[in-house]
Image 1 (tube, rainbow, N blue to C red):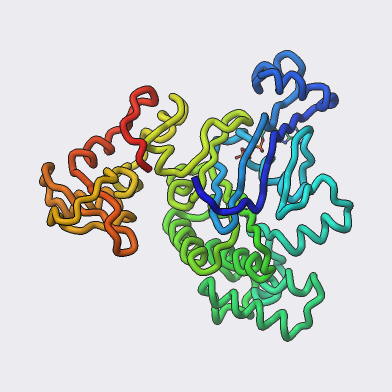
Image 2: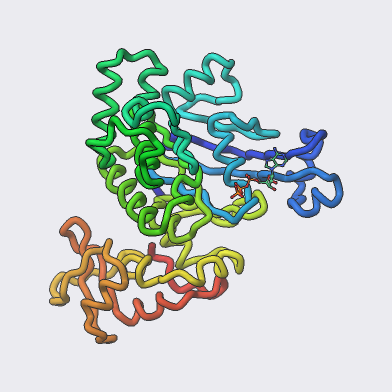
Length: 351
Ligand SMILES: Nc1ncnc2c1ncn2[C@@H]1O[C@H](COP(=O)(O)OP(=O)(O)OP(=O)(O)O)[C@@H](O)[C@H]1O
């Protein structure tokens, strides 16, 4: 469990769509699910009893199939959608208690959004688009341009300032979207399927860029995706939604090794586990200083361990983190971890 403080707390959140939504909350609280509510009362249960702590400086990924409630959930964070019941606390403030002006201020100063369709202004240059948050809050032209230039350069777009959005590829347009979010200097970045419209290779490089920026900036990011590979690559904390409910949430590695139910098992069954699982998640926490094993970093993938073992199944490694011995990796455990474990017969808990 992370000890970092929460930047956003979502507590007992319910969202029901329909004419008589508040009256439906008691049914949802009593355990009624989406399908039954639609059948019995003609109301859509968008979200049911959602509890998530979004930690400062981490990437929280909300993942689920189409219609599972991802967009509805992220839209609660800036109150584009109001809850039917429950609480959303952003940086210590209950956002349901804010009047219009204070809500506007919170949106401007604490949060930024990166959209799937980029949402750039077509008749403004890259520089103007990236500087938008500064000009909206009234910064002068020189300061706005300076800030925009800085972030455009940071996302790899130095030299493109004078171009217009239609002159850019999709990947470049999304870099402008990212630069615009960074220019706002807000703590919380909301990314709604931000990379879903991009080609696989471009998408992958945008994921790398986000991780690289994150090392320096440590923003609080909420990232929505329906792609499990993307979720596993980016998430510090992964929340999996189904039919408006959280099926499982936690560290991605933990979820992979300990799927909570058959739905998650099924979901993760096609993942290349050797490439996603880390040595630290599979090692034993036993330490013998003088065993003479070769050293492997805890953040390496199992694939790397397999390469280093040259196929020797009886080999073991000394696992290090920041130069200190933290455990022992047995190749027999690596082999076991490569095969999904049934939810009922868990073997690996030392994440
Ligand atoms: N304004 C609305 N009125 C009625 N039902 C809605 C409304 N908005 C969302 N819903 C329903 O709430 C559920 C969750 O929708 P949501 O758009 O949040 O899902 P999603 O996971 O973001 O899906 P997608 O990936 O397709 O965008 C769906 O059943 C949807 O039909």
